[in-house]
Image 1 (cartoon, rainbow, N blue to C red):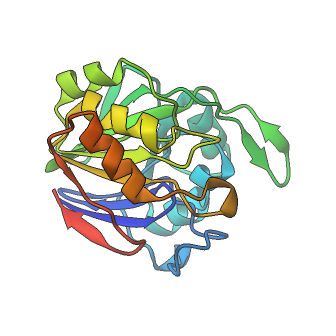
Image 2: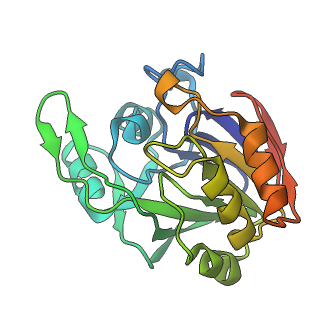
Length: 228
C-alpha cells in the first residue's frame, strides 16, 4: 500500500482500492492539490469538523465514491446526494476490496455547515483501514489507554497520529500513543497547518524514543508518501 500525506489529517491510501481519508483540501494551506483532480474509490471521514469532512461531498460525487463515516455524518451526506455507509465505533464494513473499522477517538464531532449552521455529527472516531496494508488513522483524539487494544486487536502496519496539541494530543502524548499501538511504522499528522497547532515533529520522535517505541518514525512533508 502507498500512503500519501496530503496535509493536515488528509491521506490517500492506495492499496486494493484508493481510499481517501478526511479530505480537507480547499482552505488547507499545506496542499496544492485540487478536489477535482483527486481520484478515489472510497472516502473515510473520521468526524464532522470542517477540517476533516472538508471536500467530501464534491470529491465523492466526482468519483462516485462510497463514503464511510459514523451514522450521523452518513445521514447528512446522503441528504447531500452522496453514497454513504453509516457505521459506528466497534463496527466494520467491507466496501469493494477494503475493510474499514471505526474505533474510539476522544474528541467532539459536529459539522458547522455554511448553509445550515451546526449539524449534529455524532461521535468522533478513528479508523483502521485494511486494503492490502493495514493503517490506523487515529483521527482527532486525546491519548487513551485503549489504544493498546487497537494495536493488539488489529495489528496495524502503520499508525497515523495527531500531534498538534490544543485540539488533540501533543507530541508527548502522541509518543505514548505510538508505544501503546506498537505499529511497525508511525507518522505524525495534524500539526503546523495553522499557527495555533504549530509543533515540532522531531519532538514527537524524541518522545517515541523515551517511551520505548521500537518501530520507525517517519516524518513526511505534505505531498510525500511511504510504502506500507
